[in-house]
Length: 381
Ligand code: SF4
Ligand code: SF4
Image 1 (cartoon, rainbow, N blue to C red):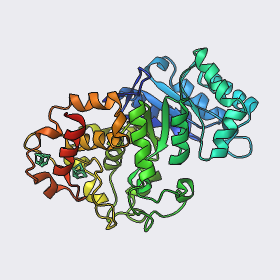
Image 2: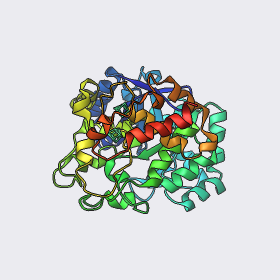
Image 3: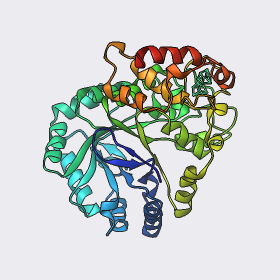
Image 4: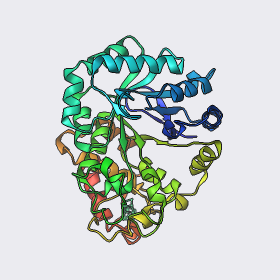
């Protein structure tokens, strides 16, 4: 397993985590085999958003004796009052469900207290006005939660939470189909439809959100990595052919700020299949040929796929672009951490010989040589 630091929290997460959603309504034996396989493979982060007592207790039982080996994302505001997956902004209800989460899981702490499902300004106003944020901050002060996070599907509300300074972790839905939808798309509504025909060009609001998180030291854990399986299906994919699980994981992991993809496994076999990602070659994980099969106008933007390698002077073209894209958000105040990460690369923009071989291999028409000069102008002075 590989691990990445989670922003400024001092904690590190496995790049593949477990989303426990599909363990809901499953027999205990299946919950146990899935969780034990995850632990065996070095997975150390599990999302538990489901509000039901049974699935929470099953997960708690399966983790007995191993609680310290994993970090849990537990959600504040996830309830099952009027339907199985409901949400509440009522302080007393939020408290009741969070207390139940602790008791069902048989633990006295949750690693990441996630403010649940913030997809509108009304949602955000409510959690501030009703005292839910203050409650979560209080839990953190008492050590009941170790860090505060939020889950969202909407780049505008996610950005607002990041800019609020309240959260240290964001759980966000990321996959290439979502990233290619227009900015106003309702991702939750799209989940119920075919993706075919809806992808357009890279949504700048989503790309900007990832860069903002990276520049503020806020890690992202990813949900909907596989688009609820639709990206793997020939019938539903918006691309010329279905993606593989590994390509979807690799896409998410190559977005700025992403630390872990939380995959919804529901058996031991499924866990083993997902972690196979770690053993695959770069070629097997390469998503560029699939995304570039959409003949839309998103040429010229780097998608950080590294399909253009090898560079004769060993420039990591995708990483240089990642830092360059963050730096140009505000050239007068490039985050020191981004300068430092850039400096730590073995080769830099100023090493580029302008040979152009990468541009011949880039399926997205990125002016790499020119961008290496721009990176050198910003970072290598
Ligand atoms: S320059 Fe092109 S091929 Fe290289 S990482 Fe960016 S998008 Fe991929
Ligand atoms: S143009 Fe620059 S970045 Fe691209 S392959 Fe040549 S040296 Fe490497």
